[in-house]
Image 1 (cartoon, rainbow, N blue to C red):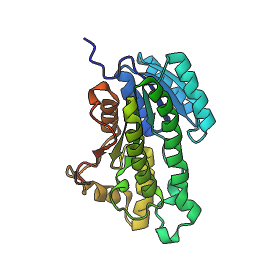
Image 2 (cartoon, one colour):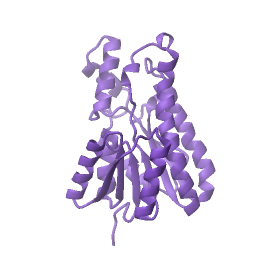
Image 3 (tube, helix red, strand yellow):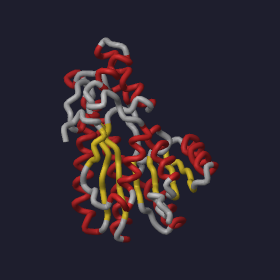
Length: 266
């Protein structure tokens, strides 16, 4: 009996060249999924696809900007043409400009504040909307994304990031209530900062500087807010995402799996 969680599933991962996308792709592949990896930089996703192929998995790479609706639609049509459909759409697109953090809201320009909303929320909406149309027509599918705990927990000096994350969680709920009657599950994972991610390392450095402390001190300060006195890892996130994307998690919809390790009360 095959116990692979995602055997015979076709998954599209947006932002596969980033740390989260990379970790999730490797775990999806391990669990038997056929992968279509996308990113703004083809070289990054191409290397990942080669790694997965070398390990016996199935993966293809394509250059797709998740902000470009036409590019996303054309790629999705290609996936459907090759695989016959898409079972999982996972958005791992990262923040494009982390330097907008570390500045008080009252000192932040309007355009700078709105950029995470205009870019990050847009990317999630574009990919989810197009996947949702196809999945609703076929009567099955899972749409997922990742947010961070500032979506629920007030955190200083995040600029528009917290607002963007909260908007994405609202999007998850609203997509779910509309698509669930058509057999489509929509869910997400909300996580603490993962220190083995390059982006988080950069972000922690920005916030440490704003607080006048060393990056290690800032990381320790964040970790102390959790019940386990540590931060989650990319591997732990990938395992949770993979389970929710599988048919063993059909009872999970319209919600965020919390990986704050207790920093946010249940």
